[in-house]
Length: 218
Ligand code: PRP
Image 1 (cartoon, rainbow, N blue to C red):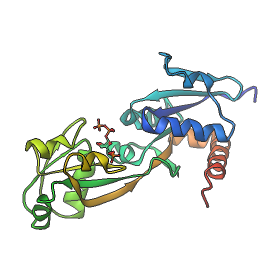
Image 2 (image 1 turned 180 degrees about the vertical axis):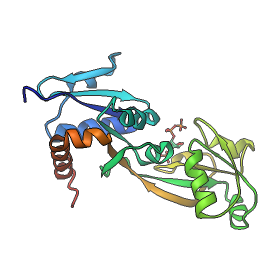
Image 3 (image 1 turned 30 degrees about the horizontal axis):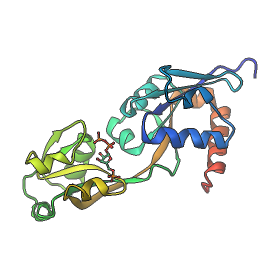
Image 4 (image 1 turned 45 degrees about the vertical axis):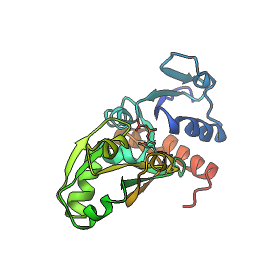
């Protein structure tokens, strides 16, 4: 234990962070400081276990992990796909389940079926491009937005959107619906490629402990 270096975790801020910390608690990894909602601290240390944690914007998590500034990251599958970083995805944590979907008003369904040249607004241009160009072989115009994507078809910026659907209430409350499903999503654990080799024992034990706590079968 004495000579161990700190393992650093980058956690995506927001929806997944709470569930991630709860899951870590189940396997005896705690970080009380981090739970204080008033704190302005950015990095938290568990001296005893030689662990460090920090919260980052979701899309930055794979960046920290690729460069080795974090050994391990917990982030949504959507972000991993969109960022396309050189990192190992080692575990599907099974929580934060939602779907990446093509959504819009129901009239747009016909445009999709007839392979019309439509506009697609999204926070995920890479995923949208992969889906329409490589999977559906449909030429579309992709418009990058940074949030509140559901607005786009309502105000006439685009015919459809590619976005995350969790409960479906944002769509329902705005008169939109799921038109096509792109892929299922959930929280994933990612690891820096060098850390995986250098800290193999600690990281594989962590993965095994998490699998046990989450009832994930081999
Ligand atoms: C996400 C997503 C949808 C919504 C889906 O947005 O972009 O808007 O959640 O959830 P629901 O199906 O349960 O309604 P988020 O809250 O992350 O904010 P954003 O609009 O800034 O992307």
